[in-house]
Length: 346
Image (cartoon, rainbow, N blue to C red; front, side, top):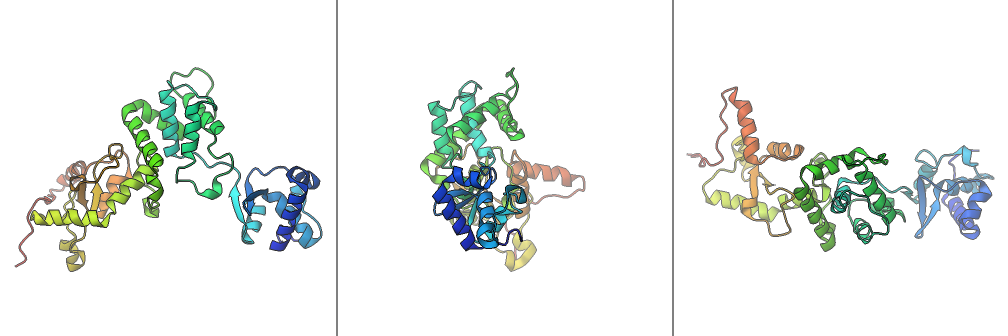
């Protein structure tokens, strides 16, 4: 027998038999356990991928594979079925992200750092809110995705790591502790972060944000991914950037980086004329849903922009400028002022 040599028609026949017998009888008939890794999704129904792939061999190669002859993971069943064009999704809920843990921590803090039960109305409300968060793709959202039991369990994972907890910690992870420590160190600020995330989810604002660019994966901020995406969308607003540049030029100032003084036109000539990036200087936990003012933006070069976003807490352009000056002073180098007038071109 050639393992994995199955056809789409064979899989459809296995699905039909599964539907006819029902899940429990189908699995029992062929000796399979319920899927713990991946599910096959077909016509809005979920099927145990390993069992379906194994039984499909019966229709294509005379007998079904025994459970011990294949795995349900990416090397066998999931791979074979995906190759035939079937939709495969994880049967496990995805790991909790920082944004989700921020909301769970906020709830735990409001409850005096004590765990909450699954039937608590606040847990039920948070469960519904987390299910609207546009971070995890649909294919990993199982029927149990962020249900009240899972949310209550996460509050237990968090509160059992609190310094005042005297029992045995549950199986939380390092990110739970990291976010909890942010709340313990800066409770008012992190509560405001949680409020802004909640507001963005409730109003649907985050649903319309463009996904984070791949090159921004290493942006670091304790406020989470959604507020960073909103921050980036403001920085990349071409109309806002143009108005900021026009305002600087009307004041007779150079288009030079406010941190290091780099001037694109002075270095690249006509190719660099009129080019510089914008940085939104208002901290994420303070940046509300209101209109962005030109005073909220700083003109900055790509390198300095990257250095600001590289590690939290983000320095202001002025703070980064001081850091650069401290470094360059040792070599006697002066950073040109962004306020210096445009040099004469005569």
